[in-house]
Amino acid sequence: MAVRWLLLCGLLWSLCAGSSRAADPFHLTLRSRVETGEGTARFNAIHKAEAWEPQRTAIIVCDMWDLHHCLNATRRGAEVAPRMNEFLNKARAAGAIIIHAPSSCMETYKDHPARQRATAVPRSKNLPDEIQSWCYRIPSEEKGQYPIDQTDGGEDDDPAEHAEWAKKLADMGRNPKAPWKSQTSLLTIDGSRDFISDNGEEVWSILESHDRPNVMLAGVHTNMCVLGRPFGLRQMAKNGKHVVLVRDLTDTMYNPLRKPFVSHFTGTDLIVEHIEKWVCPTITSDQILSGRSFRFQHDQRPRLAIVMAEPEYRTSETLPSFALNELGKTFAVSQVFAEKDGTSDLPGLVEALSDADAVLLSIRRRPLPPAEMKAIREFIVSGKPVIGIRTTSHAFSLRGKTPPDGFLTWETFDPEIIGGNYQNHYGPTPAVHVTVAAGSADHPVLKGIDPAALKGTGSLYQVSPLTKSTTPLLLGTIEGKPTEPIAWLNQPASGGKVFYTSLGHIGEFEQPAFRRLLSNAVHWAAGIEPLADNVPPGR
Image (cartoon, rainbow, N blue to C red; front, side, top):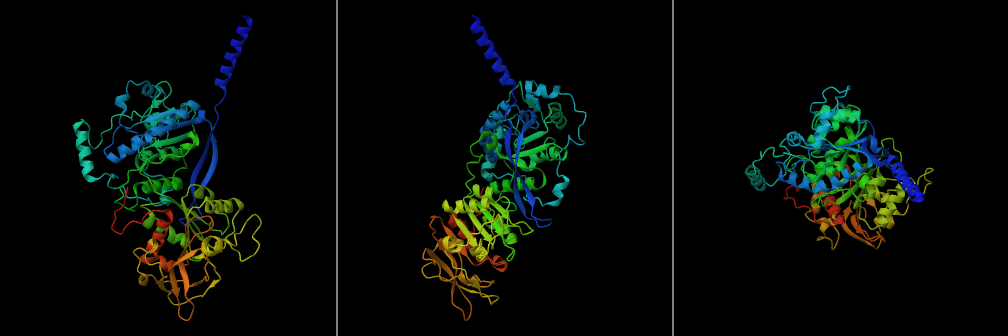
């Protein structure tokens, strides 16, 4: 009996000791955007590792309503909710508090224990000014330009389907313009631990009374409620909370028929980038749940990384515009810029390549730190597609010179990967005359391109002879000089698709024929059909 008693006491002690032990921290990677130099309007994604104590963390769930006036928004909300529920359950179990904030639905929850817990919290003595109000902009945002047109409310429904949905809502006794009455039932509300409130003063008081300086925002819609509500990102950021957006557990009210005429999901990406530049960092749900981040089922966009590190042809200006206007309907694009001071480090390169399905390179004679060169090599060796323009033929070459300490070159990148043989260029010349290489007229990369409309405005590169693994597509000629290949495909040892063109001068980006060529090449490399000229923006 004495032995059993001692064993029981030991078990109780171990359980008590385990319950009092602090939970492991949330190991997060916060992503923000930092300008490469004042006034450049070029931002790199910067990643910072942080450990957040769950007992000092709160998660606010913004407007995850049961129904929405936009049918597609209703569908997407129902799709993301199960993943969000897993996220909340894991965070709650670790010690984070959950504040459910389904705005305008408090009457439904007036007797709910989680609502009563919220109203019972004493008002904080340090309530910020205007914490009860919507916040439409904070001072830092004045430096940037809002990226999407949401003046139509952002509905992206098919008109006929939307009319049918509005009628169905009315038949249900719901207001078709504001049909929500509760939070979605797909999210668990723990009445003994969670809170329910849509009131800025209440939410702030909960955070203060429970010593929660760290705040995560999840829910919808990022460009409206998540940013602007009294408990939203702007209010949290401007009033000193260490706040982040969970960027894969959100959606945006954006209609692709409005500027900038990109897919719905690209519209969300643009808002997330705006937030990372001017409001607060972001994280993804897998940083707590592990596995992969959440992605909507209809978001089938390949992920393209564009790396820009050359000052001569100003592709850090032309390529972002090209990506938005020509690829925004079909690709999820990340961009990496060289720093303004000309350092060889390319911030965010490793992270961008780790998530990319293809890469577009515009780089000139730039050695890289070992980790970045390793990421480039591993990306290419894995067989993923590479698209290169202009100086990328000598992207990592210093013409045999020794690189600075701590940096690496790749002198054989041109013959091994591009399939070229760059020697030099002819210098300033009249416009390069462009023709189609024999047997290539029907290649998909040349679809819809009239060679007569394509004029080389930069100096002609001397690249002959190409390696045997190449397929020439376009040839360039200037008077009195040998014809040179100016666009070709290559099949490197890695087996991946490679497209390269020695075009890429700023004057060539002004030509629709060149933009079509490059767009076709990116689509071909990623294994998808280019959009026809008359296809409207897709969701």
